[in-house]
Image 1 (cartoon, rainbow, N blue to C red):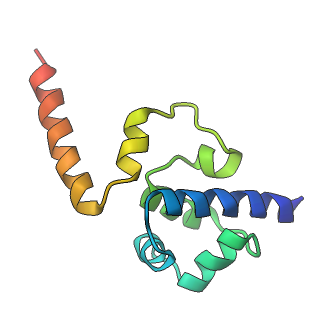
Image 2 (cartoon, rainbow, N blue to C red; image 1 turned 60 degrees about the vertical axis):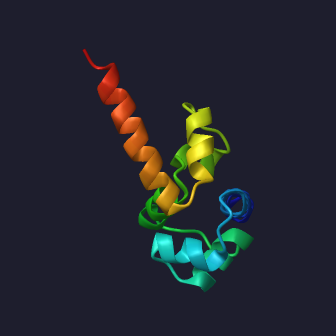
Length: 106
């Protein structure tokens, strides 16, 4: 059971990394884990702690629901767009969204 679960989780992380156009090295750096550990997770050879899962979720801008179960309750187009942006683009998008939300407030 664990091996299948690890393989499924690893496959989802691999696909998310590819969708975000990140190299394994880039994601490992963002998540503050080793490249080899990320490779082992993606291949399903190793599981991970909750702390590592949180780091990967933050680095990939994705919920743990998706990584663990393959779906997100609140998956939106905005999340899909943001996931594919570079760090510089994410910072710009955050400024734009903040200004937009502020302009909507009465």
